Length: 81
Image 1 (tube, rainbow, N blue to C red):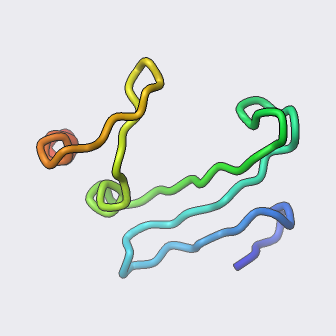
Image 2 (image 1 turned 90 degrees about the horizontal axis):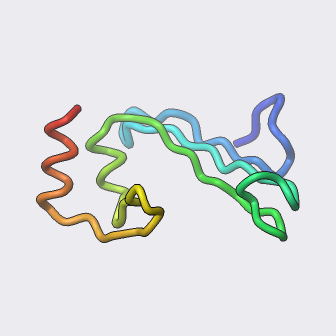
């Protein structure tokens, strides 16, 4: 689905009460901050913490390294919200 004000390459996934989240795929121009040499995309999601965690397999640490999320990690994150 597309909305006014978005670039043609951006995709909006509106809030779904069944999924408890909304998302957008945003394109980045070549050379923009965080896009790398060839441009790229970012997928941004907001919603209920349990719905977001269900979609996640890894977490980024402070050092930028991705580590797998364990059941204990998920439980700890949900306890904080």
